[in-house]
Structures are given as C-alpha cells and as structure tokens.
Amino acid sequence: MKPLERLALVTYVIGRLEERGWSGRTRIQKIVYFGQALFDIPSPYEFKIYQYGPYSPQLDSDIQLATFMGWVTTRSHEPTYGPTYHITESGEGLIEGLHPSLAEVKPRIDRVVGLLGRFKAKTLELLATALYIEATQPEANREEIISIVRALKPYFRKRSINSAIDALEKIRSVANS
Image (cartoon, rainbow, N blue to C red):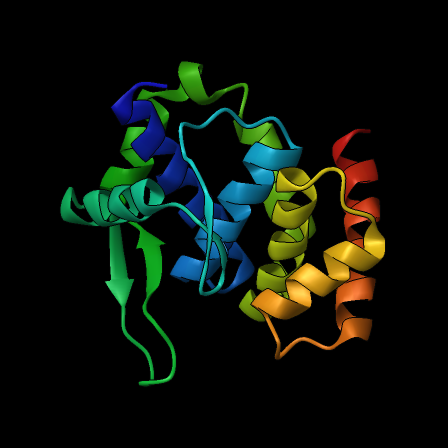
C-alpha cells in the first residue's frame, strides 16, 4: 500500500467513526486492527500488545500525519478523554482523489465500522486483546486465552473475557459471510 493510500485509508476510517459519534485514537487503532485481522483490509500496520490492546506506532504516526496535512482535525475534550479526530473537506478530497484504489476496501471498512463502531473503547480493547492473543498463540485453548488476557488486563473479569471470546466468534461469522 502506497503512503498516500495508507493515509486515505486512515482518513476514511476516521470519517466513518465520526459518523458513529466518537473517533478517538483507541477506537481508530482497534477498528483498523479488526479490519486487518478479520475483514482482509490490506494495511502495512504491525500491531503489538500495548496499554489499551493491540497498537501500531506506524498507524499512530499516520493519524498524526493526516492531522498535520489538514485531512483531519482534532477536538479536545475533558481531561479524562483524549481528543477526537474529524475529517475535513480536504480529507474528503483525498479520499475522492484516491477513490479507485480505495474502492475495494471502503465496503469492508464500512462493515467493520458498522459492526464494531458502536462499542466503547474499553470493549474494543478487550475484544481486540482477546483476538490478538488468539492470533499470536493459536495453540492456546479458551482457558489459556482467558488466563493470558486476564494477566495482561487484570481489570477485566474472567466472565467479561469469556463473553468477549464468544462475541469474537459472532464477529468472525459476520466477517466471513
């Protein structure tokens, strides 16, 4: 994926999340992660487990670059919340200018955002962390996955992690349909 296409993809994700009401950095990271992991959205981002689940420093840099270029803006909120990102007219122009190269991925992004965009960042953190553990440790059984997630995220209860794993099965079935 060329750098401009990558930035257009990020800008498009931000625009779609903004339509759902909240486009903070954690949600952007998780939507791109789910898109790449389950919906075959091509992107060059490598994710590692981090404070709020799977995180890509390159994606974070691209969000900041899109902001610097004027394709998205930020809006600050109360001190307990990070900024939200909002697509600008020039960001819309970027997407339209690269429409042919994004045409194939836009419907998949729309599906990811439609399916997961309503969840709070904390829920996306749990779902994405469970998915990351499943993907990076395919030999682990359900109890081992729960144990690993619980060790990484002790503030999530075992029952919540178990429910997240169940939800991932449903998300996978939608992604594969």
